[in-house]
Length: 103
Image (cartoon, rainbow, N blue to C red; front, side, top):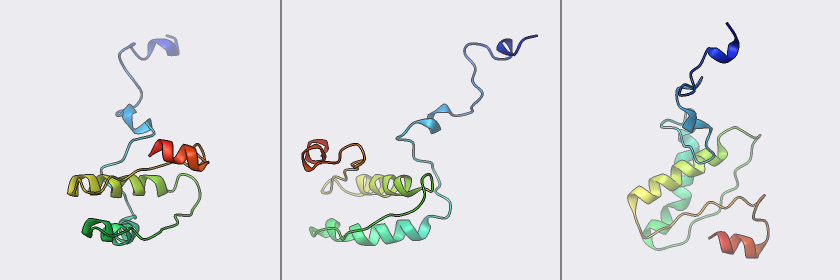
């Protein structure tokens, strides 16, 4: 028996291949409650017509920074239509023109 015959063409090794998508946000973000609360606090003025406060998210790659921002943006979209969150990857869109174009 060869290794290629272990899986049928309609099977996968992964229970949920969607988790490998760049836009995937897990149902639960473990150990990120404090960061979500802090970002919610910084964004809360926008829900009252004001401007959001600034935040800098730092840390090694793969530690949940982007996922945390996507989670808070998802919560905003569920809460109101008055605020439209935009996530811009500045490594890809790094000039003012490309950032504005993405928005």
